[in-house]
Image (cartoon, rainbow, N blue to C red; front, side, top):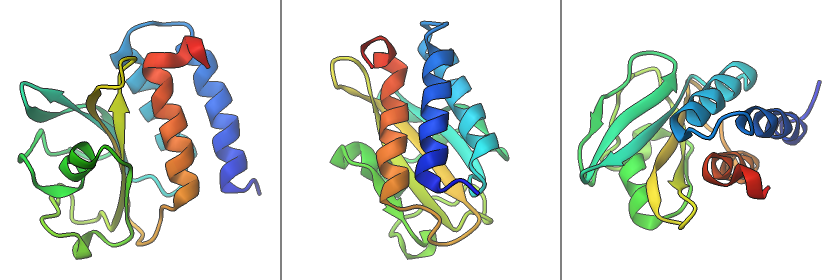
Length: 155
């Protein structure tokens, strides 16, 4: 069985090759969501929320129906945007102001999405039905993969 880092390395190479075929950021996000969601066993919900007029609106995703808009300054996604950092939440029930779009979600990782000018455009949000599903390996690789959306030609 391939370890997590090895799996991410293989997916990174595969995703990078796919993204070179299309310059549209939303198409790239859709490809990333599908590839990660169907190849990472603990990924229950995998998607992007994008900043639109100071609102955080769901974009492409894989998994059950999501919250369409996340209330401003609440939850993990807004915390990631405000800090500019990836946030790993081992147990969502322990996170203040957690927004529960699906009660089956038990842990979460949120990665800021930056454009080529390093402005935050939104977040990649991944939920798992298991507690403690995400660690620094996920953070490192999801940051690298998310970076491909606007910078694939430079990688």
